[in-house]
Length: 352
Ligand SMILES: Cc1cc2nc3c(=O)[nH]c(=O)nc-3n(C[C@H](O)[C@H](O)[C@H](O)COP(=O)(O)O)c2cc1C
Image 1 (tube, rainbow, N blue to C red):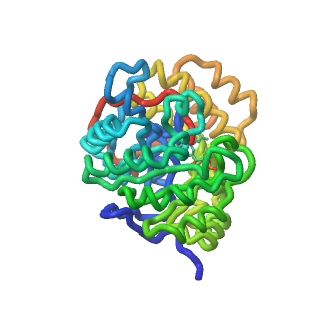
Image 2 (image 1 turned 90 degrees about the vertical axis):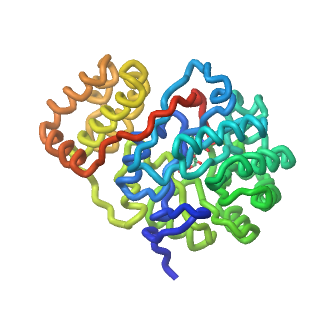
């Protein structure tokens, strides 16, 4: 039976309108990324991981704003930490900010995080991991979900032991990225483990890792029984790939359209992070968008050297004058980002 990626599914009471979830990615999943992801077919989007200690102390240097706009929902906000009570406190704030789902990170392999006992470390601490999920689930009324890796070491099958325990503790859905923490992003995601996990739990499982095309998404959904696929790196600077993955229609954008999506992304990110932070943050996106969009490398290098986001936008409009009309079309389709503004510390480090 052929799976339809436009089919709706549920995480507890939350209806998710398509079977594509946009991955949480530290340093990437800003609001502009999430809103764009929803426009291109993602049924659920996620914030990058937010430090629960940062929320508790509210004095983190990376204090930023998490703005939840109506058009990005349903939205999961991901938290990381190792203390159940602090995690529960963070989850309460996340719920108050308007998130539809609280997601817990048991996957981050980055040492800065694992050495604090958070992220992937918790895969080897089932008792603490379950206490975190249980305490968080008791503290909020929205569904609590978990994103995890297969285990710490290569070949590990820890996720299959831990997954059912996390569901018993209160997890409403599990996302599995079936690489080990040691692997980081090397090798391949082994979705045979995803299939095994699906058989073991009675909550929806989301398959994360190496989903890059419609055919690959169908294959993973059909062979694993997962409810949805999650897409991460393939969507960086390339929202069109989300549409291809959901609908199987591969319409390559014109250069005008690529420039226009980048201009909207720049403008929205500058609004979210402020000009100073955004100017540096955005540089990696220029290459992601423009190299995929057929722009020459020297042009990308020229943009990266410009200091302000306004200069970048002006340069893009000179190169692609037709982008102005394309920006107007995107704006006409987009409601205002007048969501709630809640000061939350966003993590400076990333991974999962
Ligand atoms: C730059 C980057 C940052 C990431 N940050 C997070 C994160 O904050 N939380 C998380 O659970 N996973 C994070 N991940 C992992 C992704 O969510 C995803 O599971 C992984 O990239 C595999 O999917 P892909 O092959 O579609 O990229 C990150 C991945 C990348 C590449």
